Each structure stands twice: as structure tokens, then as C-alpha cells.
Image (tube, rainbow, N blue to C red):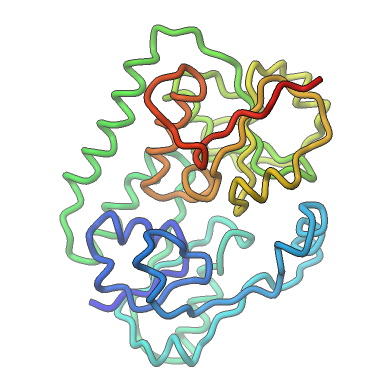
Length: 285
């Protein structure tokens, strides 16, 4: 079985299922686990995120500029049996439609599987979807991940539930939706600004203040914590944490379960979290 993943979360799923040895192509954003570094890259981006601010990146996206390139010749040469992609967000990865059109023109005949989870349960069910196509029994892995979420939910269910505002883009301010509200709930918090499964819209910092959060979580999509630290909002906020969004919150892969555990540490001091996973900002003065 030869697999090409055009979605970082799908690469996480392949790793969780123990199939990294079958991965023959990946995106330039697939950065976990470390073993994928040797896998050929079939995508590129025309947007240098390191050279642009959050506002500039947002403007580029909404002007309709192309975010991703797909190396059709390399994809053809890799002769994949299965291509994993998505149709949830054109900003996050190459779309299912574009991949399908490319495959059809090349006439290489692989199965193209689109993953489109919007809730925590759907994220975990993706392991079954992919496992079924790849001929792997995913039941034990799914059960183990659900158990970890259940353990945290039980440990926090009787505790005070702080009001939590999760922000997945800084300028403009964009609240984290989809599965993140469920992550917050499972970790013993009360999510604000978005409902489970919701595809959110930009808001203002005033709207964040009006929601009266006890805790603010900064988890910009695609930004590692060190990048977020360079672009902190000039805004007095309640106790605020910078989290590793790409690893545990932005991508709909199995590591969202670790995100729940990180949040339990942030909100209630349960378990451990590394400084890379969660860093509390100094109090605003």
C-alpha cells in the first residue's frame, strides 16, 4: 500500500495506525513524527508566513491568492494507491476538488479519500475511515484515545469550570471552533465564542472582553508557539496561555486528545505540560 498524505492531520492518522512505512508522499507542512522528514514533499506554498504579519496573511488569503502548489509530476511518479486529502478548509490544505481534478488529468487511478471532521467524535472516527480503506483494524487505537479523553472528563467533572476564550488567529481575531469547544469542555472548562462543530467568523477584541473569559488561550492556526510569542496582541487580557496550536488544536488528527490533556493542566493543574505545549504569559500591567 502506497500512501500520499496531503493533510498534516492525515499524516498523524497514518502514524497512529502504524503505517508510516507506507507513506510515500506528504505536504510541506507535515512535520510529525520526525520520521516523515525523509518522505518526499509534493506540495509547496507561495505565501511566506515568516515574512508576513497575521493581518497580511489573512489579506493574502482573502484576495484569493493561491496558497498551495501541487507537484503533479512527482505525485504521478510516486504511484500512490491512496491519497488522503480534505475539503474542510482551503486555507488549511489543498482541497479535495483540486486533488481530484489533478488525479483525473493524470489518470493514475488511486483512491482519493477526503477527511472532513468538524467535531471531536468525527476526528476520532477518521481513524476508522482511514483504517478501513488501508486494511487496518483501528478499534483498539480509537478506544485508547477515547479512554484518555474520558479520564480527563471524569477528573474535571466536579471542579469549577472557568470561562474560556480560545483564539485561533490574532489579526483579525478569530475564535477557535470545530472540535476546540469540546476539547475545552472535556478538560473542565466552559467554552465561549463558538459552539461545537462551528465554523467561526472574525470578531473583535471587544467581543472577547464582553464574553467575560476567565482564561484566554492563544492557539493561532499554523503558528508554533515561538511565532505566536512574536505577535502577541497589544491588549490587556485575563490570564492568557500560548499553546501549540498546530500540534494539538488546529489539526483534526489524533493529537487533539493530547490537547485535551494539555488543557486540563492549563485550567486545573492536572497532569503535566511542557513549555512548548503551554506557556502562561506574565500578568498584564
